[in-house]
Amino acid sequence: MKVLLANPRGFCAGVEMAIQTVEQAVKIVGTPLYVYHEIVHNRHVVEGFIKQGVVFVDSIDEVPRNATVVFSAHGVSPQLRADAKGRGCTLIDATCPLVTKVHMEALRYARQGYNILLIGHAGHDEVVGTVGEAPGAITIVESPKDVAGLPFGPDEKIVYLTQTTLSVDDANRIINAIRDRYPQVKEPPTEDICYATTNRQRAVRELSPRVDLVLVVGSQNSSNSVRLTEIAEKSGPPGITGTPAKLVDDASEIDHDWFADVKSVLVTAGASAPEHLVQQIVQKLVDDFDGEVEHATIVEEDMSFNLPVSLRVLAGSSGK
Image 1 (tube, rainbow, N blue to C red):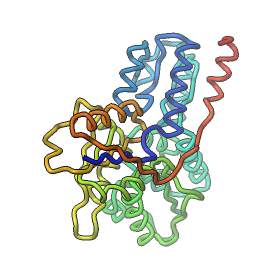
Image 2 (tube, helix red, strand yellow):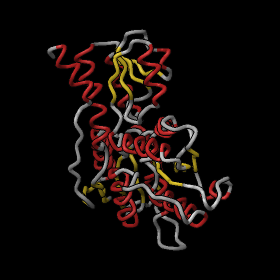
Image 3 (cartoon, rainbow, N blue to C red):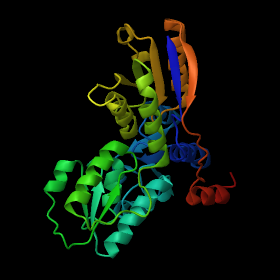
Image 4 (cartoon, helix red, strand yellow):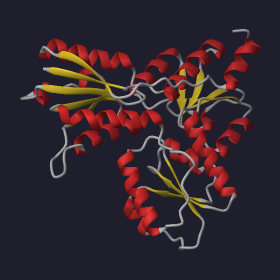
């Protein structure tokens, strides 16, 4: 069986930065170290930190007063920051800079009097944080159908922003619906969907028609990983179904029944999935199905982000 290994795949720069932030914070502050929400949406990453003494919380009230708290890569609202400061907490912000960019856009457009249409999934950590920047000005739009029900008139100031981990195809369908209804809509100055999301989706879109099955390494609560499976299943020629795809956390979830009559498989990973999990799955395919690995590079990535200033200041003051 041919095993096609997609590149790029796995960790993006924002995830790398967020994970390194927690690793360094554990060394500097010690444990328990509190992290608001999962640092990234991957079960193995979270479980690994829990074993080290990291405590993940869903409410700032769960963080003891004067403790150190890390904000996840998905970002938080200004109110949550204020609540944490009110408890005397030391704040370390591991928000992905590309998410911060969307927050700043929301704040700027709200101040300019725009009605902001936020294309994204209601309840997702990133969307919750972005809405918190300007709750009175933002309306969440999840589908083209939602656009038809919007209350704004043809002369009102409207701008759209997007969650960074959306399917590019799904986002474009919604954007087109917005443009059709509101020709005056303003677009963000640059694309909001992040480079890593776009690149991983492009790789799956281009490579999945070449194989019989796609394996996406990632957790069920990872938006970008789920989108990769959906894209594979929709990437066939017009009128033809795409390639079957399975989302797996690790090699233990692989079912041999999936591979009946399968002669080729594409392996990729969401932006929050560790590479060692990918390699374990590839090795299982080699061992169990006499797999021959072929690397397929669609685009090279060289993006990196600095660790948060607050962490560097904390490191300097502690001498660690």
